[in-house]
Image (cartoon, rainbow, N blue to C red; front, side, top):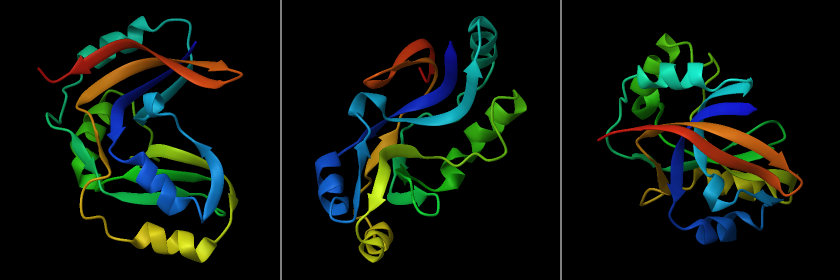
Length: 167
């Protein structure tokens, strides 16, 4: 089974974001039940129990939701549109996961919103990415979840196998 460790995320007004971005890109938008921040992609494993044991021993370093306050992209040309926040807000949790061997060196905190298929207006996209946001776009929730990812013809489906959260 394919496993990964993530924190669920919320996005407040995805319709407004889509409306702002739609003239600049064509792509496949991530369904709201799939929004998450991936801390560590494990990959194929026959047994989830070792990861559950390790997660139980990791302190949860954030008790409040972490705001997502800007949009950005991965790739040249861009192929992923995502929401993110200031890295410092994720740093303590990232360090705790790294000490348990559950974080890669290339960690970039992000919540994937759209898999970009084509850029319609690169300059307008860059302007939209630089536009200041008055309020958070959404939040990363204070949980660490071990997910099983099942790939289907309709896309990925996630099943929470274990959830570690603030009390």
